[in-house]
Image (cartoon, rainbow, N blue to C red):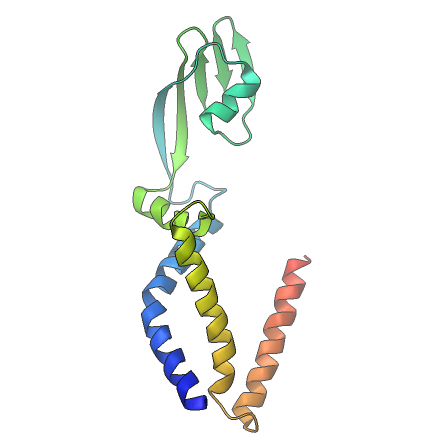
Length: 165
């Protein structure tokens, strides 16, 4: 059993090395999603339904924390831009990741309706296998195994502390 676990652990690790690199890069990028780090400004002109009410405009444009600053006749002015009620034309700026990083971050955001969902489930199960199979790398009576248990417990305790902060 020890030998088989080591072999599975080794080759699954080599197979997942590329996937782990992509997940780590996209995960780091997502940490900064609330800032402008790595992002660039993009001007958008979008034709949408005319005569939308201010409260529905944010949903239609998919802008988070949408807030109308003022309404001047036909024009709705908001932080990111403007909307002409009669023409149904919205002109606004959006701050976005570059295309490659945006594609990478979609891996983390994938839900059950997205084909990347299968990759996420496979990756999650593979990481769980790594956790379990790592305990077969060393004999339970060795010093390395016992220290490994202490490090595992320390990781669990640290994670629980950080969750509740």
